[in-house]
Image (tube, rainbow, N blue to C red; front, side):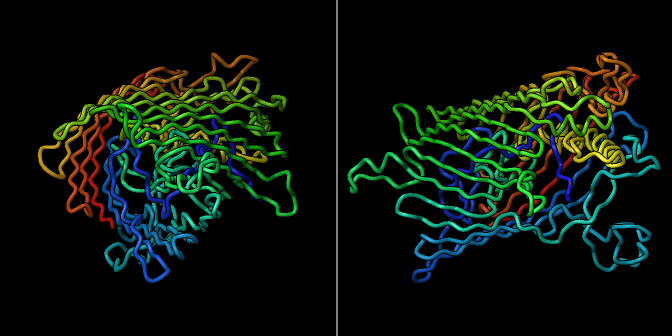
Length: 555
């Protein structure tokens, strides 16, 4: 039986409901203040008699340089690579009422060149470097570089095999007289939410989106208030009025002969949109409730979320908050193999929020962002799970969360998963220690400023001040170091130092040039001045620098 990745101190990041009612997954007119405007060609429908077609394509190549990626080590400090991705989207419909849609990524994150080691996987195509004639399919990943797979310090960047083609989405729509029915693999959310992001387009103010959060779902959406209106007054548009959506998600199916090991979810969401409402425009207000359950682990999770956005004059405002509450014994069961503690149902109490106020003028933009994700400073089974994790593609900055913290947590997660595997644990919650570049256990203030001196050119700068919501704790090594009933004196951070409360200050910059609305060039840079949350037992953490250049072709 497959051993599903589980929670360590966080819930999966895809607990938001998709409200994409427009065909082809094109964005609605209302967008979050924390995203950049982005034209999406696949929303255009081309008709041929009764049939319609939509298509979109994007090719991205990205050069990355980080020095150092390991803030506390004298070895394996620098990383640099060029990766690329081709994304193809296609849709076909009949009378724009019955639709099929698919999206696939090719060579996603694959390195340029013929890479690997001949004696082990992944293997290069040719046995000598000088004789290389064609590239292979590998991607950078954190893996074992030393000799001890139970020691996080023996892990670093290495190469892994990658899929040549990955289908992100495959679903069908039908527009019924009473609403829209969508069935298949689809985005867990439309747009850039704090718990789920669709991963589409080029909307991040810094960095870029990858796959997004996807789900296998049956979704029905309707406008219930329109049924009470005379037929000639009914509004069936997707950008005005009240919309109700209901969904069923299947997250995990292990044994097809058993039902208790399935992870299932039901979703209810309501949203209200108004192009004009008094002195405000592009108004959006939404709320959702999600229930996820897993009988095998006595898991019952409830998620609540609120989101509001709109424009008032030159101000663009967006705010979102979410909470996850419930209980599960899956984490305690797996951790008991390390700590020998009794298995109990742990309460879940997690919260996150994001708020942005933006002031837009033709030549400049002033921007202020606040982010919050609750943390968890006690890995013991008897305490609640309180760590909230943003969606991986909801980028906050360029370097701290995306790369430095991702590298620290990936090494700990790899060593912890190896340990649990050897002990015969039924699941591996240590895998979720790896933040995968997401914002988590943090409070951040992120002022930014844009200048647009000529058409298509944007110069952007920002300063990210990031504090820990709870002391930053490595749960795996803290549990292993516990020598009594209390753990407070045994806690360590991901670098082996004492838990700290300040991640550091990051300065970010971006030069972006968009040409003919189908080509985008980006150059980004960041400098991280680390705080005590990233320092080792000697109080040391080096300053880090990131440089990133990117070309994107899209239609």
